[in-house]
Image (cartoon, rainbow, N blue to C red; front, top):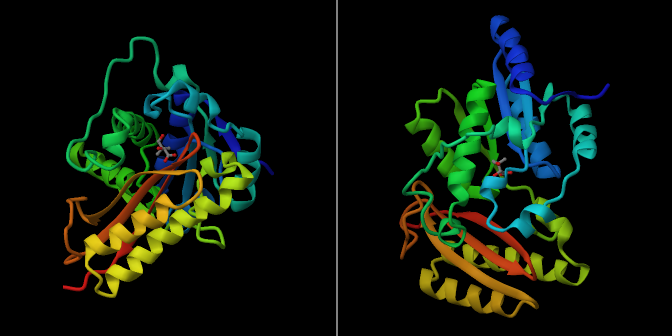
Length: 284
Ligand code: PAF
């Protein structure tokens, strides 16, 4: 049997009302579709925690920085629904643009602090777009839990901050990044990587993991990052955007790994921007 699909806020509200009346706990997994094993791992984690799981699929125009990137984003609703059905997810919510942003829509949710720097510095307005749509999805689904991948680590912290600051009663759960066997972090954008770039993209994750190993072994942070930048610069067709060590808790810059940290990277391969990050255990 296929997964139930609803496309309007009203249909969604009716379902949620019924579940709430029955005292059921609800989890939401927000996605932009083009589902891969990383998304499916979030759905499995949600099913283990809640009685009902809603997956949302909406390619949110407000978080894209270019019309070309928005247009190129894969749209695979049919395949997505087929991947979700066997897992036992209960509802796929697929609103259209007008359902999410009806005429006259004029509100933006903007999180300061954790949204600044890293991707926030290179993608102006991106996290406002994410925070706005995710706030709406949290309110529309009235979910008790929300599941996000740690691959988008900065997004995870932005969303957590937003839910806390707006008193939205939802627990935001972060789940580990899922990787290919060669280490490449799964991303809906990977499918657009040309074959001759695929190996170089895996090299990005390899450089990140090498720097993580070095820092955890006591190599000074600046030296480990310099070596990783050299390794990344040597990857064919790769343009590094940033590689930084930040505090895991609030993304404050870290000259030394003296507290729980996160090493984060963003790089371009042709017109495809990839991000990745790993935890760095502190030595101090
Ligand atoms: O991570 C994503 O796919 C998107 O940023 C999200 C959280 C679904 C919001 O559009």
